Length: 165
Image 1 (cartoon, rainbow, N blue to C red):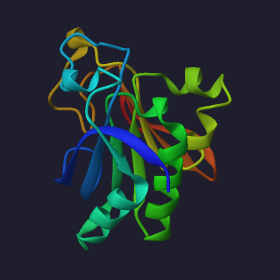
Image 2: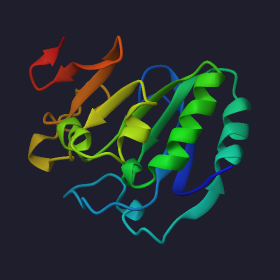
Image 3: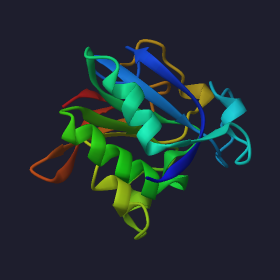
Image 4: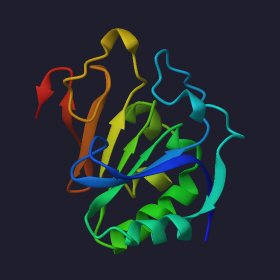
């Protein structure tokens, strides 16, 4: 199984997507957003290396989990192991959410992100912008960020600065 570099794992998050989720904080991020909630994830050599199997085993320990969330750092720096992890979670009946500092439009311009984009169920896109910070938003930190969900295999916006769709 593949390895990935992570900053840590929260095994019972209720703020990173619907239901109780296992949240994996990937290591490495060049966005360096002002006011970032996880600046310790910026260094690509920090954190620790774990296997996909280790994370799957941890996921299996909690029968209450609705799914897994990839956060950061920047998950799209580690598309291959995260795509493999997404496959394992889907096999267990869970959903996969992913946070990224990139916009969906930018990710779709390149080939490498598709390995992971094809495997996730919901995407929260856009850098955190301190001037747009809003604590009342569902699953987002700033108003510029959007939540996308797949509808018949196509991305459809669910939440943006205008509200719910």
